[in-house]
Image (cartoon, rainbow, N blue to C red; front, top):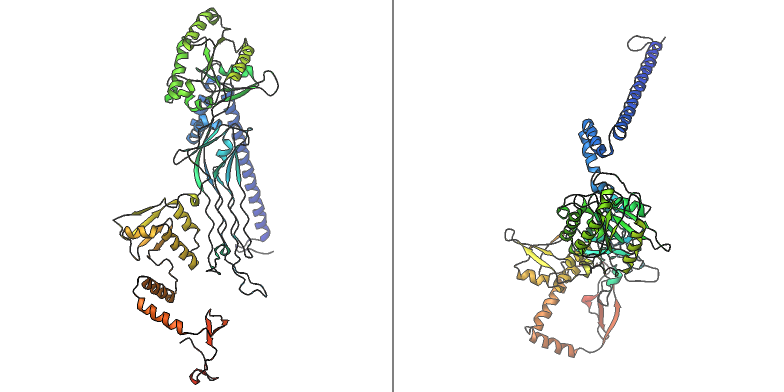
Length: 594
């Protein structure tokens, strides 16, 4: 038998190993069984406590207490899920970004038999746009809140042979009707989507950068520069949903609004005998008359005194009845003072929105099936007509559906008689405008005395130009300098005290200020010629110029154009000129640049 290091036979060691493995597997199975039984017992106990032992009005309180005993973290999660926006999302924040444009290409045509074919760099493709589209199949902003960051695809870069890059695909995000869009930073109104398939551009894609073929001119036949793609627009938006309905329900809590909605339509809102049963708006359609001409009803949570200041749940959902043509004011006949309830709700509407308070109302006295209410029905109706100032008051019983059909028929005729709603106000901000389309003169030069020699240029147009400049190409840097001169920025920097070598900042780019030196790569001989012509224009070299003109007149027109060599120099020789011996080179001599 083989022995191990401890001196034991290998067969005994193998038997001990198998036994230990079996024991570990048995303990593991026992532990998993206990965990399964414990979780099953906990689920059964929680369900029994929630649905059997407690009345409906105390279910939420007890479930919170049970979670509090088990874990404080679960209690906080339950509190957040009981928030009024957990089940119904009527507000959302959204970050939209348009696709970046593709970069331009620097390329030259090189084919057999085609010398100096010229530039052939194509431009980049434009980036995709981001659109919000009205979808009548939605009634909440939950899909928007599930994807906060929306970005369109970018355009492809340009290629040689004058091939342009492909454009990026647009991003379309559906939203429900009645969605109002605002800019988060400024709060400016951007638009509203109310009709099906209505589209709003919220983030425009960047323009594709131009290739070197676009910069070819008669003077510069071989440009070596291209533009980068324009970055897409990026911004934060605030979406606010205002449900579009024909009739909106108003009233005190537990007045019977949800019961009326359930009686007149196929909607099944939560109905109970305690206040604030409805915590989210409910929509229903009452089919009356010809098919497809239903009446859209909107039920919101009950209002209490101080709702305009934030009391109760009413303020969070009053916006949903702002688009309604008619308001249905439901009065609880069993209330201690129904007339004062009517006056209180109207006062809250006046404090919240005067336009909402001026909407036409229809008042209904609910719960006339109760004997006490039926006895004083005539007196209450007369008082409600005096308080409302009109005769559109009707007694009903939502529980027994008494006169509910008559109410819906009258409401439909009254809604049809109302004028069409006014058009939404014009937008305060235009998201379709990019940085290159803004005013080029809208810029500002900032400087701090604590940091001398440093200047920052802020402006949408100049910052976008800096982002699109291809800083790796010297000719692109020269072009950016010419743009600074053309916009008057260089002159204004000098007036602000900027000198040669100061730090200039444009967006995220820093460079040294060089007045009248927009191109750091200009050869010295060209600079000397520029200086010569400047002095000549000022009259300082008038005599030298006259002598040169006299010499030019003596030269005969016997010069002949021979060839254009690889160094871009013209060889001019006279016909009757003979080479001297000093210009004859030996075979051993070598030409050098010195």
